[in-house]
Length: 101
Image (tube, rainbow, N blue to C red):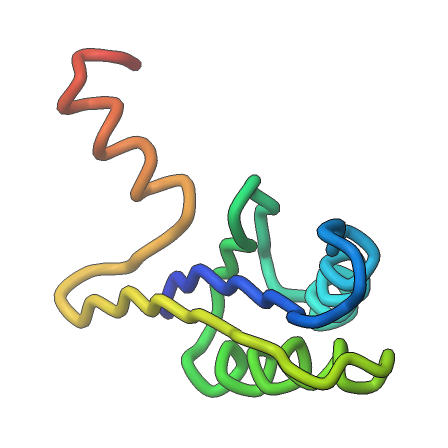
């Protein structure tokens, strides 16, 4: 299991707003059935590496299908082999270090 942060940024859309393109990418994430969380700067996803990489491909291609001519996609993948990873577990570990429950 891996945790990934995916950010898709369409360029040259003629507008500083990219919300509609991001929404299309999030629809793709929803359809994947993977556990996810939307953040202000990207989408966090939890799943098997192969599923995540296929999801990234689909998300990256979505703005092109909408007519965009340039897309920058950033992906961060966290994979541990010594213990199970989860979105909640990563947040809980930081909260424990801060003394929060």
